[in-house]
Amino acid sequence: MDTKEKKKVIRKYLGRKFLFGSDAREQALLEDNIDIGRWAKNMEYLKAGQPSVIFFAIEEAARDEVDPLVVRISDLAPLSLPLMFSGKEHHWFIAAYPDVVNYFMPPYDPAHPERTEEQKEGRAVYQKLLMSLTEQPDPTEFLIRLKRFYKDELKKEFSLVAE
Image 1 (cartoon, rainbow, N blue to C red):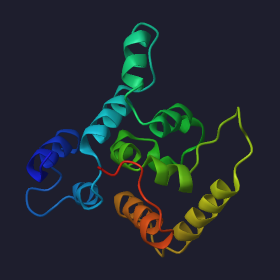
Image 2 (cartoon, helix red, strand yellow):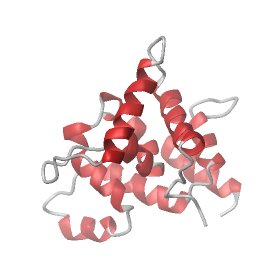
Image 3 (cartoon, rainbow, N blue to C red):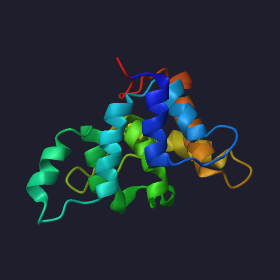
Image 4 (cartoon, rainbow, N blue to C red):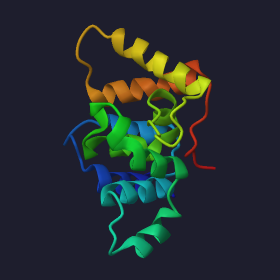
């Protein structure tokens, strides 16, 4: 998929935020070489919300095409993610960077209440980054800061990078 096609798919889900200039969300996805096809499937899943009983079989088939971390985050999110993720406007980030979300804001799983050392560490780093801000952060800018920290400081790769 070339850059023009990627932008078309991205804008389908994100819309066009600015008439002039660029959208930081779109730039992040392109800069990190996120697999836009996989991202789009994750976005569709998040957009659909929790599976309904009537369409359970259809949604289960679609669920198989979604990144397992996105499914886990989506299933557990209402219980444990910060308010910043309560609306659909940040699904773009969960769909593209589920590994970053899982590191910094691991969803609480009642079936496995104990957090791993990495989850504890990630949560602590998240709190430090949040506390280091002098004013209320723009959520998109803060999310981009988290993913950059994950990549640049922690030297971790994103799971949805295109091959």
